[in-house]
Amino acid sequence: MFSDLAAPKADPILGLTKLFADDTSPDKVDLGIGVYKDEAGEVPVLATVKAAERWLAETQTSKRYLSSAGNDAFNSATRALLFGAGTDAFTRSRTVQAPGGTGALRLGMDFLRVARPGGRVFVPTPTWTNHGHLLAAAGCEIVHYPYYDVATGNLRFDEMMEALRGLTEKDVLLLHGCCHNPSGADPDAEGWKAIAETLERSGALPFVDLAYLGFAEGLEEDAHSVRLLAQRLPEVVIASSYSKNFALYRDRVGALTIVGTNAADSDRAHAHLMPLARALWSMPPDHGAAVVAHVLQDKALAADWRRELAEMRTRINTVRAALVKHLAGAPRDYAFLGHQRGMFALLGLSPDAVRTLREEHHVHMTGTSRANVAGLNMANVERVATAIASVSD
Ligand code: PLP
Image (cartoon, rainbow, N blue to C red; front, side, top):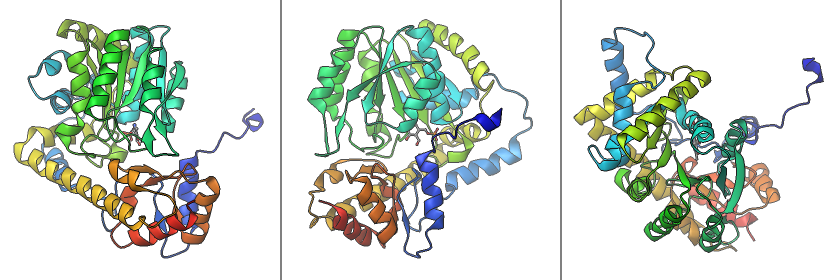
């Protein structure tokens, strides 16, 4: 009976939403859920998205089914964004549209059972919590590798490389392509080179989660990781998301891209993805992907979108720098936050300190002390920094 079901473990992020809603302080600040907010604290629809939606409403003549691969123009535009149109990686890759980055990850993990049967998936510690849930749901065996040291604010690079020496050709290495969630700490160019060399030696398959393309340094710069891996290695799997860089969160727009040794191999892999997608969702939701395809194909809209994306990126980097500046007198040296990128900062506070921040200072973040920097603005950053400093040791 349903009445016999034990209560499931509460989702900490959803719990945060309620705590924030229940906080009656006019000064409350939400640094919890991972959405980009503008200087006014809003999560607006991008102007380029609005323009494409108007175009879509006027020109769409049918809502008949598409294939399990989704929108072809979107898939091609995704590969162009990842690798550059006409490049070798563009030519030897194939993309399947998926419901958000989450859908792309799940589809990719189901594909691992076909592409690397019996293989283990090496996952960074820490990582986005949903990676564990998705891998478990797909029946993948997880091996954790050290990635980031919360105490020092640095990558555990040498320990990571040591752990990656245990990879075999049957295994898979899960990587964050840029703006690592939750730490914001990414390998530098040398680091990516070393990772590619390890993968070359072991024959393991890189599986890159790219949910924040364009949020660190720029579209081209942030694609460096996947471009390098595709250049150096025969095969790469990439799960990308348009939730953040197009602010299309609820429309569920993502893509799974497979880079094979050659186009024929990728076609073979693509043929395996189709029945997997059919069993998961039959076909992905069209609206958001049609919007992205139109924006990326229209020269003027694409240029406008790049400007809107740059505005989001610049604001995040500006408030991040302001946070570091206002934390300068804190008991702990928070300078490391200034070298990290993307929406998240892992502050390294105890659960008690996080509770004090929430209850006494009305600053809300996850229990792991992951703060969404995009929830800050120039009006609240100093007060938040003072509050963080007051609970730091
Ligand atoms: N991967 C990472 C690291 C994320 O942080 C997120 C979203 O927060 C996703 C994937 C999935 O994004 P979505 O399914 O909303 O497109």
